[in-house]
Length: 253
Image (cartoon, rainbow, N blue to C red; front, side, top):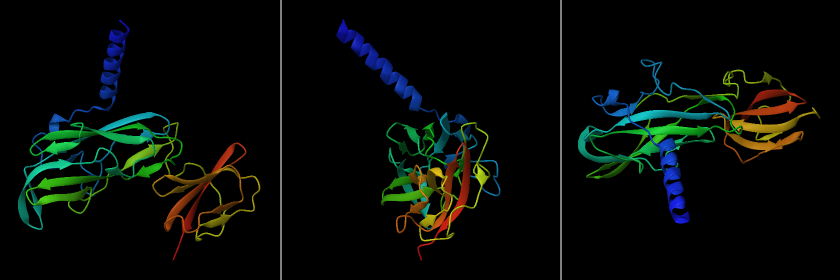
């Protein structure tokens, strides 16, 4: 009896987990041309892309439909396509921390002339900064001449996917998530910042994709010299119950 109950529990758990990550392609795109739908955002398609925003600490899911052709063109040469594949992990870059993906088929191998889907799902954690994330999918195209990686969106498929991440209230984006305050110097710097404000607490440094790259509870110095790439970053901190943010530039040249 215990074995039977255990088997039933395992089956129900498996079915429940599978239901959480499974997706169905949108049959609306069955007769469409090759690509991932909705199409990326472009000047001609300003309302496309990932149309559903995510919120920090709230469950999220969004389904992308994939239409696979039977031929592909490389530099004007048409070759037969066997399948398109994305790795089951790590094939979609620039997702918020806590958001992952799953495919239908589950192995993420899409045969030619098929219609499949990718589900973005999960819960974006508080390690993220609200803002606009730009996912990029790496597909491996299997042909008679070998396997070729392409990026989507990319050179052959222009545009952007934009996943908007809001705060826990599902209202605030990166454009004005916290009150701006100029407390940290120098700006730009090589990654060494300091402040004369002794009241800073819960300090976090985010990159331009909203990913947290450094944190400490309370210090008047941030030292990430030679640890981060040059570019735009955001320092976020608290002073008592109030929070602030400041745009910072790191230049390693």
